[in-house]
Length: 126
Image (cartoon, rainbow, N blue to C red; front, side, top):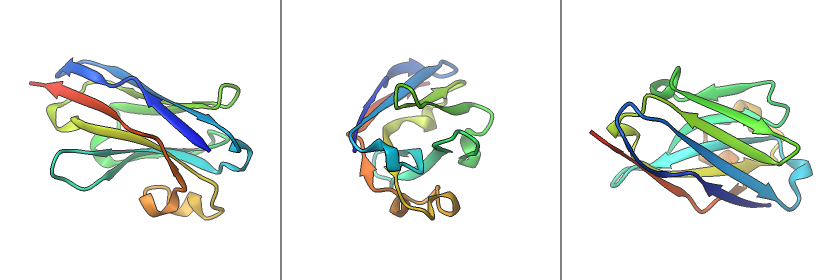
């Protein structure tokens, strides 16, 4: 599975961005997909995840109510709509894909993902 993330950029606080992650290859075995981010000098952290069916999704507490994850299974693309952005949302955003059967119980853990995109930089200015 290959993942191509896009949509990052520079935005002022309070603004919005929509990230996209296009998947290709052997996507039929995908259980779920997620977004993680890494701020300068910090460890990679979970942001949001969604099941392949889009039946379930979950979010890191600080983004709840501001970010929305969605998926288009026809286009094999997952999106992250980010509204009311804050400077602390700044970082490199990575999309990831999992084919693991236990993904649903560990969707907020980077270890549950098999494939990663190259990352897209989001910078929120104050």
